[in-house]
Length: 113
Length: 114
Image 1 (cartoon, rainbow over the protein chains, first blue to last red):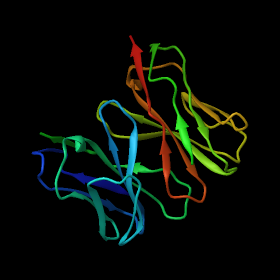
Image 2: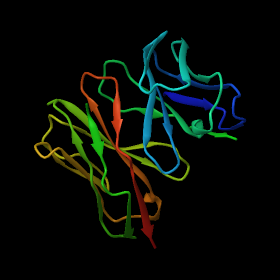
Image 3: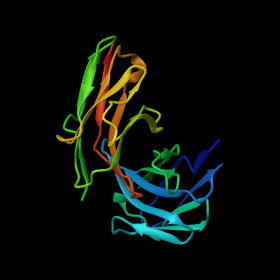
């Protein structure tokens, strides 16, 4: 069966510090991968998605970036965090070429102070 | 561009009663997929139910069912015999058949009153 992992689960970082959130998927190959941000009490904002290694689509211009160094690994990064980067970050995957739903990871709660 | 609208930020229901959550979407596509996700306090997103646009029959999963009105671009979720464990944020989502992106509404927070 497929599983999706995210770490860390929680993170507190000072403004201006770098960020690296990691997401890995097991039990499937060549998945579509997604990063979402959920601000407090709000909906999901798609940040990035990837259909393959090295292929990243950015939905919202900001100081975040994403990379996919391996087939089942998706990384969300920032060189300098802003206060507005605080939120709950969700990674998700869906099967390529299929009309299945997305499967979500447990999320990372980021607080920027 | 596709948009998904959930016009009810908060809803409440008495335990064992029925509640309907609303969702509308905007698209020029004829073939697509619609989903309802549940996000309990644990924040883990869980798929509740899925509807394929080319199917006229409304999807049903146990106590959960949808009312899919394609012409009206409406996709409501009905929860019957509500239970305390149904308390959560519910998100409606859309995906074009040939697309990779999912579009989510802003969510409806459901409270179940004992």
